[in-house]
Structure formats: C-alpha cells, structure tokens
Length: 416
Image (cartoon, rainbow, N blue to C red; front, side, top):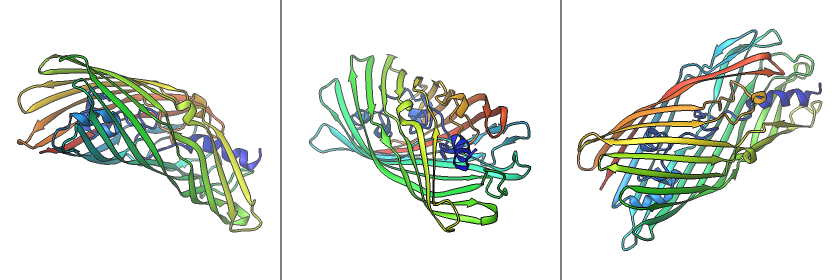
C-alpha cells in the first residue's frame, strides 16, 4: 500500500471531528436556551436573539431592546473507541460552549436588527493512550471547530407576515494528531496537522406567518458554505528521516450544508405552546470527498507533495423536532423537547474521532423572570446512547464507537 493511501484510510476517520459536540451531523440541535430546550423546534417560535441563527424573521417579535448571553457545558459519559486491543473513553470529557446576541427595534420602522455570536456545533475527541496495531501506546485526536458572527434583520411586513435574513461571518479551524510518536512501520508514518483555518460568509432567510391566534407557520433556508481550510502546517514522523515539517497544509472538501426547515406552532390556550419542525440537511453535497494536501517539506529527501483524497459520502438528513412551553405561573415557564435525526455518517466511515453519530435527544428546562427586565433560562439536554460497529482498515473488524452524554444549558436575558 502506498503511503498516501494509508494516510487516506486514517483521515477517513479523523477529518471531520469538531470541538463542540455533534448532534444533527456537525450542527447542534438548537441555538440559545429556549431553542434548544424545545428540542430545536424553533422555526415557527423564534423570538429571542438566537433567531439570527434559527429563523431571522423571528427578530420582528422583539420590541424594544433584548440581550441574551448563554453558555452550555457538555459532559460526555461514554464517548469511546473499542477494538481488539482497546476499550477507551475519550480524555476530553467536558466541552464548554458560549454565545449570545443583542437585538433592537428600529425607530419608525417595523423592523428589528440584531447581532449574535454562535458556536455552530460538531464533535471532537482526544484519546491520549491507545494501543496501536503497531505495538505502541500513542495518541489520536481531531478537533474541528466552527463559530459564527451573525448580523441580521427581521421585519413585520403585514399584521400576519414577518420576513428576515442574516449574514454570517464563519470561522473554522482544525487540529489533528495520529500516532505521532510511533516509529514508522512499512508504509505508515504518524503525523500532526495544526493551524489550518478559514473565514467564509454564509446567509439564512426566513419567514413566519400567523394564521390566527392559535397557529403560526415558519420556514427558513440556509445556503451551503464551503469551508476550505488552508494556511496550516504538519509534521510527519518518518523514522530515519526524523521529524519532517510540511509548511503548507490544506484540507478541502467539507462545508456547512444547505438546509430547508419548515415548522408550525400551536397555542391551544394562553398557557401552552406546542411546536414542531422538519429540517432537511443536505449533507450529501456538503461532506463528500475530502482532499488533504501537504507540501514544502523541511527535508529535501522527503516527498515534496503528498495528496490524500478520502471519501466521506455522508447521507442527507431529515431532522424531526417537537417542543413544548408551559407557563406554570406569571414568572415561570417550563420546557420540554425531543429531537431525532438519523446518523448521516456511512458505517464504513465511522470513527470515535468522528462522533457525529448521535440520533436521539430529550430536553427539559425552565425560564424564570428575576424581575421586570431580567430572565434566567436553564435546563438539560440528554444525548441518548448510540453505538456503531464497523470494519476498520486500521483497527480491524468489529471496531466500535459509542457516544452518550448530556448538556447543561443556561441563558441570561435582559429586555428593556
């Protein structure tokens, strides 16, 4: 087997492993506490600053000024890799996410403008001690993160119809390490990729239509955003040649996907709000073949350019979300939600480093008015257990990845 082909087999499992936990592929199920605690059923409900990243038409519901700041803590309880030699839990058991937004109604216009920051989502794993097929104990990890800065505008066009749009400045970066300290064996060489990143623009459009006092419909469209990662460096452990640095690393071929979401919200009475969403995510076009290129080595005896093309072949995903909000009293609202999206990753391309396999999510939470202007929203998201068994070209048949955990979500809001 040529060295490039062997590297390709490894990269199939580690190319797409974001830093924040992957839930609907490499997306979170929701953004902001209310969106998440209603299971992501937010398209017809969006009414805080997170509407910038869910349905910007919802900004039109904000009258006056609103600030939201939120944080989420992930605890993985069983993010594990298992093969004939290992049954190891990832060492990075905790991940902290943060974001927020500000929105303000414009004077003399039926519009509200906003600016938000969002951790887009994903999953990453770091295994410090894995028994390798080459008889060593070594590290494997892959951390790929995506964040957005998003301005947007939502306008009330008629008494029933609101429309909106947002533009995102998207930043993505990647770090990878695979058996770097293991001496070369045959065509295998351990490596470390660092510093590859990108900045790109994306956009989202949305609408909400109030049928009557009980029913509201919502829809949103998100355009695909290519994420070519460039400007990085790499180190390879080539044994007799020593550690060889490549000054030019690029990883191209993955993107944030095109999405189409539709939703409905129903108020059977003044205290209860029920919501549903169906979201089509075009992963098949966003994550297909990933090309990694290394060039400009520090040692002239090393191969001048190496190129690896790794098929990912993700499937399109349809996500179903259900949510409920119940006004327990004048100050307290209770939330519950459920989110399901079939794992978009083909079994043959599975990996514990690519923990995008989660399918079922249950959410519970509450919001509490602290006074006339401040509100605290908090709750828990359960990431229900998911196990995938696959045949790995490196770790052998019946290799297993398991994923399970929970999020604690909190958001502090001020309106005035």
